Image (tube, one colour):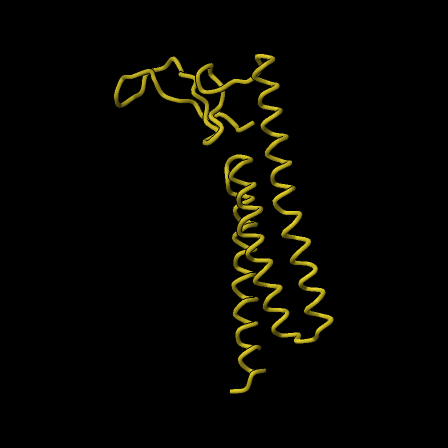
Length: 143
């Protein structure tokens, strides 16, 4: 097998794994419950998927100009992904702090929805049919 055949096979594998990582990131953005988990899904697997896809494209293209452009794209993405994640998390943290300072935040202690599950911690006043207890949680839509 020649160098070109090996580079094509490795490039194809890198493209496939990178595409799967990007798909995993997109699914995580849709399925994860809160901002911090979504932010993790948007940065970690997306960055790795992008690097693998660009590596695969570089191995397939083999042109100096193309590889240089792909390195520029990877460098730019590696500089901007952490910065954007940090700015988003800082904005969320500051908005939570401002809400707590104003007394508007409702956490699990005061009847609000749990941030991780989106479920309310309020109790309803009817008894359960099987146990006779009146301490069931009522589901609530997430904020």
